[in-house]
Length: 109
Image 1 (cartoon, rainbow, N blue to C red):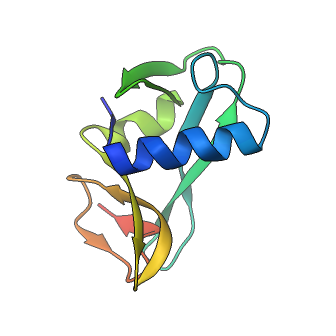
Image 2 (cartoon, rainbow, N blue to C red):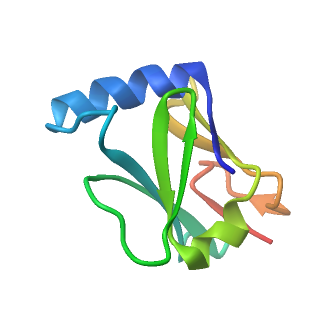
């Protein structure tokens, strides 16, 4: 399961509307891909449909899709949004990550 903080929810709703998506019917697609300074990086985008093998979650009113390969890397992760002095953007708080990079966009297990 992936959780969505209240700050992240507000930003997701705003960005989805800006891009022509409806948060009540469309999804955030969260995945993991090779790359980044720590070996794996997060991938986040909006999507209107699910694919075979996708896992679907809903937390805090936001629907999330995760592909089968990424699911094991993301169990227990919380999607947060930071608007502080260290930069703005989505942050993944992943309890499975042994090491993360300074920007928070990549990790290793």
